[in-house]
Image (cartoon, rainbow, N blue to C red; front, side, top):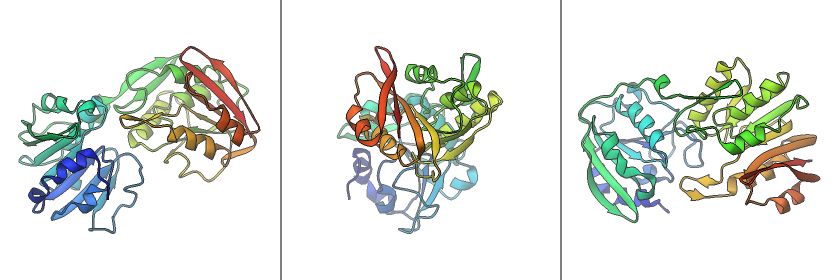
Length: 337
């Protein structure tokens, strides 16, 4: 079994976890919770992945919580938190504020992350609630430990950031794409939308919901389905729709995993990162899966960095394609079945 650098660091201290009730949360990228011996284990995930999909894991009787937020009831039997630091500091602050508002005083806290993710800032971020000490650093990762001294108050609405674009209100939680500002690539793609767009439309990786509300504001008679594998994105999109008095169907889905019907149009601003690494698998899967989820004469429209070329892949999978808008930074592809 291959474990991430972060998990390998935790494994060095596996003996101290045998008599603990462990609650895992954060950016877990492997199956360590299944193999780390403990009295009881739960895993909290807010992003759909291939590692943890069932509410109750058949192996080692692990409980899986798939939700954005954790409640006091979910952690009442646990005395240890192991948190995997994400690449985004604002997302870490958001998640930890929720977690530390639920755990009892005296809970042991272990925080692990890559140096490049900014995990060292955990000491400053959590100083009001615990004093963290470095347990060990190896293989470009650091493991901190501490004990919860004070509880924090968590209010979800305090973490939303609001952007305004052409009269539309975009609501976004930390960790969701477009949290700091509305992405220029998304703006370029939205500028290609018109009243002529109609029918059933799928927004893959909806994030804050920016693309969907931009389209619906111009074509209110369209039927839009929004999908994302991140629970914070689902909630952000729901708030964005509500703020603009628009309606759409929102599904939790790892790309097309929850989609069975076909659409007239698929739109997307796909990510080319997996955690801290460059990864083009997402955009490749969107292109390959689009032909199976488009109606006859259906269209795929997506934006990418101008330096990336998908002509060969599009030529193999679509009847025709072209670039409909381009800047120095981004370009919008249009492909037809």
